[in-house]
Image: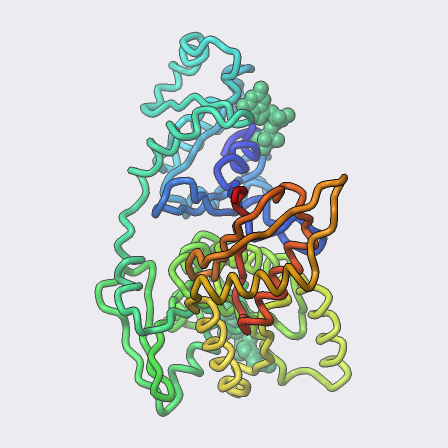
Length: 430
Ligand code: GDP
Ligand code: GDP
């Protein structure tokens, strides 16, 4: 958090960048610029929120624009208060600082844009703030990022819950996600109310990440709960707010994300945010279009067409129409969850993936780009969740985006991969 122009979004991008992004920058792909994961520290991914600019005046800190920022600060484990090292402390910074102190939240002072400046002088200017932890960075040049991470990581809460939740490997971990009112708790209650179902809380989890185990048709699942799905009373219902941090946490912990949409409302911006986060995390995805019961035949056709258009960026995800209220579509939903899970965790041999690469390459070799032609030599599996293929070859720099997509589609078809992202890593060399 910080006032406008200090470099918050530059820092956010530096922390959330990933070398092999699964989310391509292309039309239709949702990329929420305010929320993301930092995966720069191995095994310690964490969620980040860029609160946008706070102007710091009465209006700025109390007004509607600041509400989201305050909500994010409330939820956060740690706040990075970003200031501009070039301009030094300003009145707005003073106001934000005073406000942060009042919230009682733990925060670090991040002094940005220190490139080309004398560090002692800059830090001296902010000394009167009396903040214990001051970290100089130059976000635009990726400088100071490792030092920043070194300070941040020990402040993150212990990963206890995630470990507890993953301790039962034979259970498929499912998160039901979506904005308020799409029908998440109706769906979960419906599932828990089914007669042949045995459900119980997962012991050892804390209040914030409640999970429920259930057995359905002889299969074991663990439902990761984002918003106290089961215990919501009528009174609480009115105040439930969309918590992106909780959503991030649930995505991180689950194996299959079921994102609910409301058939009557299509794909809203918040829906797109949730879908974008699932993609960013590389998780298996099933899209459940809920409230299908309330739609006329004509509306259904309209909705189908609109969904095809708006969800083109994750067309590999299966779309199931359901009614949580009436319990229709449940069997199909669970079948799709199984297909997505099986695809995401499938194991491959080097020979079968190399064979696939050879066939793909021979039936349609990459086109020449400015006189250069990529050569693809062999392939080996690089892990699951999502399925990853490591392709070795030469002149891979000129491999076009459309050729990469061709390879992805070829592998998807050949290995019947549905409901999961597929990742290719290209390695230059013989
Ligand atoms: P935000 O409004 O706080 O999100 O700020 P932005 O990230 O949009 O950055 C505001 C301006 O500061 C942009 O022109 C950036 O290029 C510039 N900027 C960001 N980080 C640095 C840095 O480390 N050094 C310098 N010199 N400029 C930076
Ligand atoms: P949540 O905030 O995502 O947990 O949503 P809720 O489960 O509380 O549902 C919000 C509203 O949508 C409630 O009034 C539900 O009765 C209604 N609802 C949920 N699922 C369906 C459905 O399949 N069909 C219809 N018509 N209404 C539904």
